[in-house]
Image (cartoon, rainbow, N blue to C red; front, side, top):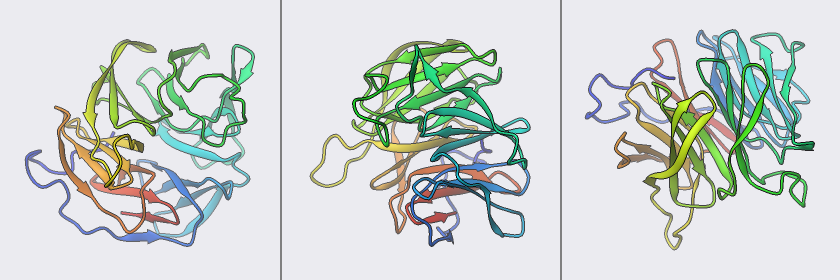
Length: 277
């Protein structure tokens, strides 16, 4: 969870300019800050999990990455969604430490795990849409799952139109899910780790011209509970009451975002061939 970008949440969200940080890639995803000086991200079709160190050097961390997509740092670990059907974790900085947390549900592989968020108990919420999945879908539904720290897996949501981005509120009482195939961003009350209530519409994303059911991709959140959802129009910044404050536009369509930097106030955004900040 990032630090609040501004001291006063009613001020303009971003004071700086959008900068292309790295480019020349295929399809970037899953930015994750290690809490110190390194940004991890994935290039999905290339099958590479990259890192950019404190000196700005780009290097491969894992290759092949089994089409890793969403990433998140938690404690001393880096968690990853492998679209080839697994949720895994690495010890930070150790490419040989891969540990599979779950690879199937009720005897079938996942469709293609896409994005994830870890709660304070070490449990992982993750989305499983249809993108890059075998057909017919192995799970026969597009779902949201939870794998507890002890390894128990529960399907929490079924038949949401391609659930994609996922994040918890700072106090972990709400779970936000950004579907790719509907305009409504969903929110679920979290009653205990891995237990959620019925879904409700949290916000309706602004739509590209001529479209009315365009959804989003990845998302992140700041400590004031402002949600940042990547969409075809850019990064839509959503207030805690569900209203959209502004849209951060980029030269390319963004896929995911996270906060990082020494003070936690730099927004990193993956977008097609590039990483922006």
